[in-house]
Image 1 (tube, protein in one colour):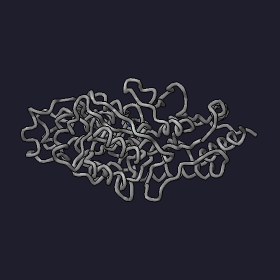
Image 2 (cartoon, rainbow, N blue to C red):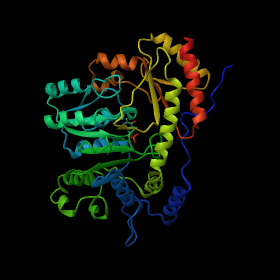
Image 3 (cartoon, rainbow, N blue to C red):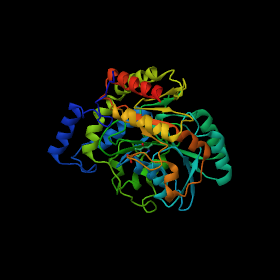
Length: 395
Ligand SMILES: *Cc1c(COP(=O)(O)O)cnc(C)c1O
């Protein structure tokens, strides 16, 4: 008997009805620009910023055009200079080093450990070698390294940490929300992330000076007083002439559909993690297949699933992937020679002149990845795990 899975790994849930109602209200009044407000009106963008600041416990929040914009805005707020080295994970998505390159700064990659997080020993070495003052830390695929150790290392070396939380909105380390360990946290609200506005981003910080710069960078003109989660006017004194307008605001339509989704996020996280545990249980004990251990202090969001096939030669992995695909289970492989779909690897980003990283190469050579959209049921996930298990045992 060969079961086949027929669901779509890229199909997210529909936008909730209350979000559609809120969007229609914005469309009906027509004030889509965040600063286009009726007398006394807060506006959906400013309200979203208030909501997200409360959700993360941050003092300040800015909503922007994309997750990648939030990352570049964070670097600009920290006044990273052209040519400056910015450290980042070798295992991340292309827009992360891309944000660094957008300032003319130079991404320098740090090794990855089998837990899929940054190698702290190599990070320490890179800090010594480069004198970098900024680490853009990517919690890639939702894996959060030991943030206590990482922050002790970076604080001790005077390195500012920007957290890329594209896969960790709603996650935490030891009870502290992801994005709240470093000086700035950046999030994406793109369709494949945890709340969906097609495109969009959020930035949080407790630092009034950085928040004021970020607000001005995003294109606030003289309207920073229309924000509800920005620092007081004094924080902006003298900055208006110094900080360029690198336009990248969010609009009221997107914010309107995000606010009801944010309110539902804890419930969605519980559903994601239930799906994740079904896959994890279904793949436990398969010889030659290594699961990624999740540390007890990591409060993760299981919106995607990774496992390793350590030591498998490439042709064996390719045959396994083909057998799974033939049964409707489309897996991504970080060891592929060529970039495919959204999946590419640090050594394919020639524009960043990456140095070889043997340990990361070894991890990525056997790394398999899949999304777990909330349109999947637990029964779907049990079937997916049965198929992967059978095909891993078959070859
Ligand atoms: C999606 C993503 C980003 C960028 O977010 P966009 O909103 O698509 O610009 C950054 N980092 C990681 C790890 C991502 O997956």
